[in-house]
Length: 196
Ligand SMILES: Nc1nc2c(c(=O)[nH]1)N[C@H]1C(S)=C(S)[C@@H](COP(=O)(O)O)O[C@H]1N2
Ligand SMILES: [Mo]
Image 1 (cartoon, rainbow, N blue to C red):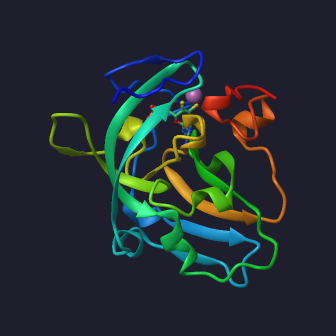
Image 2: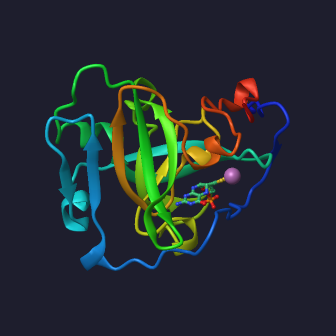
Image 3: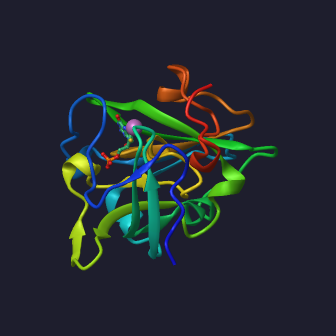
Protein backbone atom coordinates (compact mmCIF):
# COMPACT_ATOMS: atom_id res chain seq x y z
CA UNK A 1 0.00 0.00 0.00
CA UNK A 2 1.46 3.35 -0.92
CA UNK A 3 0.86 6.09 1.56
CA UNK A 4 -0.90 9.32 0.87
CA UNK A 5 1.31 12.42 0.90
CA UNK A 6 -0.41 15.38 2.58
CA UNK A 7 -1.19 18.24 0.15
CA UNK A 8 1.81 20.32 -0.92
CA UNK A 9 4.36 17.81 0.43
CA UNK A 10 7.06 15.75 -1.34
CA UNK A 11 8.66 12.56 -0.10
CA UNK A 12 12.28 12.39 1.04
CA UNK A 13 14.35 9.38 2.10
CA UNK A 14 16.85 11.39 4.11
CA UNK A 15 16.08 13.12 7.39
CA UNK A 16 16.74 16.86 7.00
CA UNK A 17 17.86 19.01 9.93
CA UNK A 18 16.06 22.26 10.79
CA UNK A 19 16.12 24.41 13.89
CA UNK A 20 16.76 27.87 15.27
CA UNK A 21 19.95 28.66 17.14
CA UNK A 22 22.74 26.46 18.47
CA UNK A 23 22.82 22.71 18.79
CA UNK A 24 22.40 21.98 22.50
CA UNK A 25 25.41 20.27 24.13
CA UNK A 26 24.14 17.74 26.66
CA UNK A 27 25.55 17.85 30.20
CA UNK A 28 23.84 15.30 32.37
CA UNK A 29 24.49 17.16 35.67
CA UNK A 30 22.57 20.21 34.53
CA UNK A 31 19.87 18.51 32.45
CA UNK A 32 16.42 17.90 33.94
CA UNK A 33 12.86 17.42 32.77
CA UNK A 34 10.21 19.59 34.39
CA UNK A 35 6.48 18.75 34.64
CA UNK A 36 4.76 22.00 35.59
CA UNK A 37 1.84 24.37 35.08
CA UNK A 38 -1.68 23.18 36.00
CA UNK A 39 -0.48 20.28 38.17
CA UNK A 40 -1.16 19.63 41.85
CA UNK A 41 2.57 19.34 42.52
CA UNK A 42 5.37 20.26 40.14
CA UNK A 43 7.88 17.46 39.48
CA UNK A 44 11.41 17.54 38.08
CA UNK A 45 13.11 14.39 36.80
CA UNK A 46 16.81 13.71 36.31
CA UNK A 47 18.06 12.10 33.10
CA UNK A 48 18.40 8.73 34.88
CA UNK A 49 14.86 8.98 36.20
CA UNK A 50 13.51 9.72 32.73
CA UNK A 51 15.48 6.85 31.19
CA UNK A 52 14.10 4.31 33.69
CA UNK A 53 10.50 4.98 32.58
CA UNK A 54 8.82 2.33 30.36
CA UNK A 55 9.88 2.38 26.70
CA UNK A 56 7.79 2.36 23.54
CA UNK A 57 8.82 1.71 19.91
CA UNK A 58 6.65 3.29 17.20
CA UNK A 59 7.02 3.84 13.45
CA UNK A 60 6.22 7.43 12.44
CA UNK A 61 5.54 9.50 9.34
CA UNK A 62 7.06 12.96 9.67
CA UNK A 63 5.71 16.00 7.82
CA UNK A 64 7.70 19.23 7.88
CA UNK A 65 6.01 22.51 7.01
CA UNK A 66 8.96 23.27 4.68
CA UNK A 67 7.26 20.56 2.49
CA UNK A 68 9.31 17.40 3.04
CA UNK A 69 7.68 14.24 4.36
CA UNK A 70 9.55 11.16 5.52
CA UNK A 71 7.63 7.91 5.92
CA UNK A 72 8.24 4.92 8.19
CA UNK A 73 10.99 5.99 10.55
CA UNK A 74 11.04 3.98 13.77
CA UNK A 75 11.74 5.61 17.11
CA UNK A 76 12.27 4.32 20.62
CA UNK A 77 11.30 6.55 23.50
CA UNK A 78 9.03 7.30 26.39
CA UNK A 79 5.37 7.94 25.64
CA UNK A 80 3.97 11.24 26.91
CA UNK A 81 1.30 9.26 28.78
CA UNK A 82 4.05 7.74 30.98
CA UNK A 83 4.81 11.20 32.37
CA UNK A 84 1.12 11.70 33.20
CA UNK A 85 1.37 8.79 35.66
CA UNK A 86 3.91 10.80 37.70
CA UNK A 87 1.73 13.84 38.32
CA UNK A 88 -1.81 14.81 39.19
CA UNK A 89 -3.35 17.29 36.79
CA UNK A 90 -5.62 20.07 37.91
CA UNK A 91 -9.11 20.02 36.43
CA UNK A 92 -9.73 21.28 32.89
CA UNK A 93 -6.23 20.81 31.48
CA UNK A 94 -6.73 20.92 27.70
CA UNK A 95 -3.32 21.70 26.19
CA UNK A 96 0.38 21.28 26.79
CA UNK A 97 3.45 23.21 25.78
CA UNK A 98 6.52 21.10 25.15
CA UNK A 99 9.65 23.14 25.87
CA UNK A 100 13.22 22.78 24.70
CA UNK A 101 16.52 24.61 24.40
CA UNK A 102 17.06 27.61 22.14
CA UNK A 103 20.54 29.15 22.22
CA UNK A 104 21.23 28.00 25.77
CA UNK A 105 17.82 29.06 27.09
CA UNK A 106 16.20 25.91 28.54
CA UNK A 107 12.68 27.12 27.82
CA UNK A 108 13.47 29.18 24.73
CA UNK A 109 11.68 26.91 22.24
CA UNK A 110 8.16 25.61 22.72
CA UNK A 111 5.25 24.11 20.81
CA UNK A 112 1.61 23.93 21.91
CA UNK A 113 -0.51 20.81 21.42
CA UNK A 114 -3.92 19.46 22.55
CA UNK A 115 -3.37 16.92 25.35
CA UNK A 116 -6.20 14.58 24.27
CA UNK A 117 -4.39 13.88 20.98
CA UNK A 118 -1.13 12.93 22.69
CA UNK A 119 -2.23 9.94 24.73
CA UNK A 120 -1.25 7.21 22.26
CA UNK A 121 1.97 5.37 21.41
CA UNK A 122 2.59 7.93 18.66
CA UNK A 123 3.53 10.75 21.06
CA UNK A 124 7.08 9.93 22.06
CA UNK A 125 10.08 11.54 23.73
CA UNK A 126 12.76 9.72 21.75
CA UNK A 127 16.47 8.93 22.12
CA UNK A 128 16.96 6.25 19.44
CA UNK A 129 15.81 5.84 15.85
CA UNK A 130 16.00 3.32 13.04
CA UNK A 131 15.72 4.13 9.37
CA UNK A 132 14.38 1.70 6.78
CA UNK A 133 16.97 -1.10 6.26
CA UNK A 134 19.28 0.36 8.90
CA UNK A 135 20.26 -0.42 12.47
CA UNK A 136 19.22 1.45 15.59
CA UNK A 137 21.22 4.59 16.25
CA UNK A 138 21.25 7.26 18.93
CA UNK A 139 19.47 10.52 18.09
CA UNK A 140 22.30 12.85 17.00
CA UNK A 141 22.88 16.21 18.72
CA UNK A 142 21.47 18.01 15.65
CA UNK A 143 18.27 15.96 15.79
CA UNK A 144 17.79 16.65 19.51
CA UNK A 145 20.10 14.55 21.69
CA UNK A 146 19.62 13.47 24.41
CA UNK A 147 15.82 13.61 24.11
CA UNK A 148 13.38 15.11 21.61
CA UNK A 149 9.66 14.92 21.01
CA UNK A 150 8.09 13.33 17.93
CA UNK A 151 4.40 14.26 17.53
CA UNK A 152 1.67 12.13 15.92
CA UNK A 153 1.66 12.43 12.09
CA UNK A 154 -1.45 14.63 12.36
CA UNK A 155 0.87 17.52 13.33
CA UNK A 156 3.65 19.21 11.38
CA UNK A 157 7.08 18.41 12.76
CA UNK A 158 7.77 21.84 14.27
CA UNK A 159 5.55 20.53 17.10
CA UNK A 160 8.40 18.05 17.73
CA UNK A 161 10.56 19.98 20.19
CA UNK A 162 14.25 19.00 20.19
CA UNK A 163 16.47 19.08 23.30
CA UNK A 164 13.36 18.90 25.46
CA UNK A 165 13.33 20.39 28.96
CA UNK A 166 9.76 19.89 30.12
CA UNK A 167 6.01 19.85 29.66
CA UNK A 168 3.76 22.64 30.88
CA UNK A 169 0.10 21.72 31.40
CA UNK A 170 -2.39 24.42 30.46
CA UNK A 171 -6.13 25.09 30.80
CA UNK A 172 -6.18 27.08 27.54
CA UNK A 173 -4.35 26.89 24.26
CA UNK A 174 -1.35 29.21 24.08
CA UNK A 175 0.95 29.89 21.13
CA UNK A 176 4.49 28.47 21.18
CA UNK A 177 7.61 29.68 19.36
CA UNK A 178 6.49 29.27 15.73
CA UNK A 179 2.81 29.81 16.49
CA UNK A 180 3.61 33.30 17.82
CA UNK A 181 5.36 34.01 14.53
CA UNK A 182 2.23 33.15 12.57
CA UNK A 183 2.24 29.38 12.19
CA UNK A 184 -0.86 27.30 12.84
CA UNK A 185 -2.04 26.42 16.35
CA UNK A 186 -3.49 23.09 15.16
CA UNK A 187 -0.96 22.31 12.36
CA UNK A 188 -2.63 19.34 10.68
CA UNK A 189 -0.67 18.45 7.49
CA UNK A 190 -3.61 16.59 5.93
CA UNK A 191 -5.68 19.78 6.22
CA UNK A 192 -2.64 21.82 5.18
CA UNK A 193 -2.88 24.00 8.28
CA UNK A 194 0.45 25.78 7.86
CA UNK A 195 -0.32 29.37 8.93
CA UNK A 196 -2.88 31.12 11.02
N1 LIG B 1 14.43 23.06 20.52
C1 LIG B 1 14.04 23.17 19.22
N2 LIG B 1 13.25 22.20 18.72
C2 LIG B 1 12.84 22.26 17.43
C3 LIG B 1 13.19 23.36 16.60
C4 LIG B 1 14.01 24.36 17.18
O1 LIG B 1 14.38 25.36 16.52
N3 LIG B 1 14.42 24.23 18.49
N4 LIG B 1 12.74 23.39 15.29
C5 LIG B 1 11.53 22.62 14.99
C6 LIG B 1 11.28 22.53 13.57
S1 LIG B 1 10.75 23.94 12.80
C7 LIG B 1 11.33 21.33 12.89
S2 LIG B 1 10.84 21.22 11.28
C8 LIG B 1 11.85 20.11 13.54
C9 LIG B 1 12.94 19.51 12.69
O2 LIG B 1 13.47 18.36 13.27
P1 LIG B 1 14.70 17.66 12.57
O3 LIG B 1 15.79 18.69 12.40
O4 LIG B 1 15.12 16.56 13.47
O5 LIG B 1 14.23 17.17 11.23
O6 LIG B 1 12.35 20.37 14.84
C10 LIG B 1 11.54 21.24 15.61
N5 LIG B 1 12.05 21.27 16.96
MO1 LIG C 1 10.16 23.41 10.59
